[in-house]
Image 1 (cartoon, helix red, strand yellow):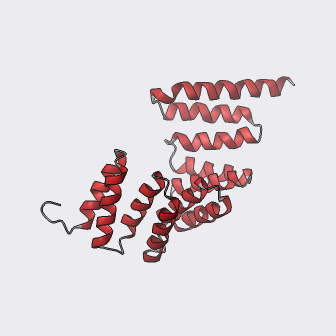
Image 2 (image 1 turned 30 degrees about the horizontal axis):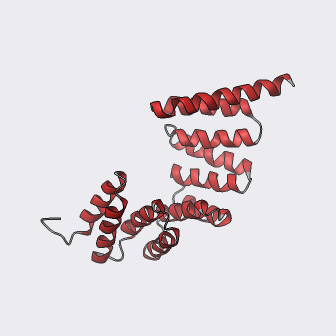
Image 3 (image 1 turned 180 degrees about the horizontal axis):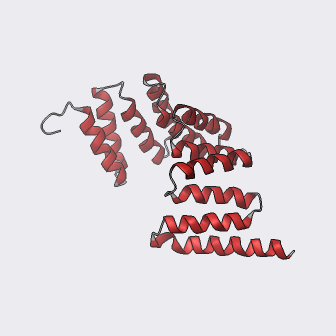
Length: 200
């Protein structure tokens, strides 16, 4: 940027790095500057919307995502992020609608499929949620939250043995010490409920 301050991509890149460091106000300023240089940069708009969502400014986030989709109607991430905002607002039908559009735009994006599963789960469409989470797992089997989300479906449908299996896989995929105890608790709880079900 010191060499050429007019390059919007440089601001976007720094904004992404700042977002990862939770320096959200500074990141927002960089994305805004990038959009001043190129108002049609849908990638920058989506990244700005992510920061706005993290700052709980949901109305502004939806506005930015709408502008991103005007510039690029096939931006799968914009639909996914819009789904997330509506999900956080508990507007589940709208969330599901956006997650569905994300998957339609990019059928092989596991995050879009995971979002679709969350939308279905919130709407209590368990079979559809199970299918969506399973597709996410099939595409990217090394993300623990996909297994964890699928385990939520198994738990809701009282298939506790299956839930324990998914929690175990999640714990092997994510070996972060900060989550080990939580996964142990979830596995033990599911196995206990499964054993009670077999004995009753």
